[in-house]
Image (cartoon, rainbow, N blue to C red; front, side, top):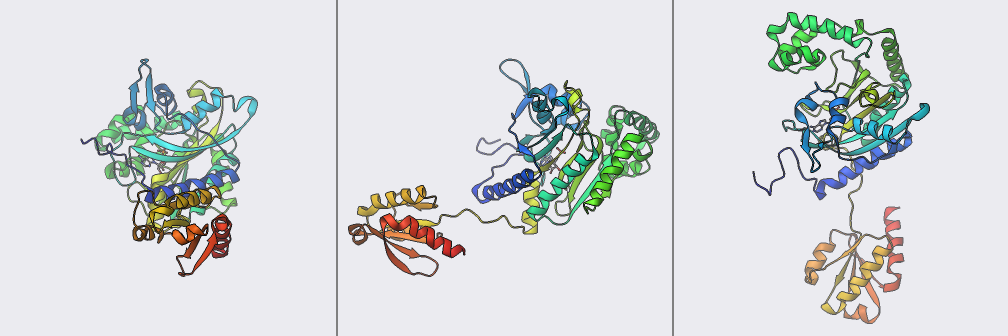
Amino acid sequence: MSIINAPRGTRDILPGESWKWSYIIRTASEAMNDFGFSEIHLPIFEHTELFSRGVGETTDIVEKEMYTFNDQGGRSITLRPEATAGVMRAAIENNLCVQGASAKLWNWGPMFRHERPQKGRYRQFYQIDAECLGIPNAAADVEVIALSIEIFRRLGLKNLEVVINSVGCEKCRPIYREKLLKYFEAHKNNLCETCLNRLERNPLRILDCKKEACGLIAEGAPDIYDSLCDECREHFAEVRAGLERLGFAYKLNKRLVRGLDYYTKTAYEILSGDLGAQNAVAGGGRYDNLSSAIGGGKIPGVGFACGLDRIMLVMEEQGCSFGKAPEVLVYSVTLDDSSRPAVQILTHELRKNNIAAACDTSGRSFKAQMKSASACKFACIIGPDELAGNSASIKNLQDGSQVLVALKDIPDYIKNLSRICHA
Ligand code: AMP
């Protein structure tokens, strides 16, 4: 371990990448707005019990992936491994869904899971998350799925696949669980060690084991669709009809159970063909029992989270556009030391006029300053002659043309020029 290396599974998002992140978040935020979702900001740490009760004691996340510690007051605290439980907690605490009210909320930020790092899998990763609370109807599921697809459409992601399933509810899942348990018991000798451990605790999780031998056994497992109660069956049919109505292609995957216990009815993922093993760019579903599991009343919910790190990987891979990189429009340059104060004032005036401007602050030569200016559209050059005339020479660095402009007129002059350049 070296203290000048970031901890394993974490990384720095440096300037070359950070503006692309901002673009993704801006695009997602606009889509959220258009779908009527409001942004919220939540704590990055919560009481450990929120996740153990909300996400589920038998999930990988709670069993082995959480960053949990006791704070100075002896309370068990966990860095959030996912956003949904925190959003639900906030909705309960702040009475956002009382008397049948609904809330459409989104947020983004870092999540923490102690997983084995690999391409697209980090210990600190970033999610964009949307949750629709208070509405039990399938139309809300459709809206949430449509929102996630719309974000990816706006970002220009191609080659995606929407996979959906129903995982039943508290009425029908126990029956299915029993059927599964019986089936897997009979194949116990061929299951991997992890699945053997899951057998009693959470046999549904065996369905999505990535090991080949377990996968083959899971293929022959009882079908969840045969166990769904009428309500879940109807809900699922409505979700599917809704997606079809909006023209979305999707695949059914009866083995998609996802790693979080709180899902009821709809579970879905959006997969990318350009990601390798960690191919899910988004995952979500309905969680009608989460609220009661964490001590709130009955608040149904449906939502999704997409992985910002993975969206970024796919967009780079597919050559998607990130919009325009931020750039400094004007670089002000001194010919000699006597005009340094004038350059400083001019740069300040330009910035006050919302013009992206920069100048040298380390006393470099004219040549070195012009080199920095070459990355900009205009250079404002001030030497003794310009200074005497309260003016600057404005050099258009694209066509090399140069004009003398009074200092006080420069902001308007640049605004007009850049308007013409952009026209
Ligand atoms: P989940 O909360 O597990 O349903 O994950 C939702 C989405 O978050 C996934 O589809 C991924 O895009 C992303 N994600 C989950 N875990 C990680 C991780 N360890 N590193 C990077 N992205 C992740």
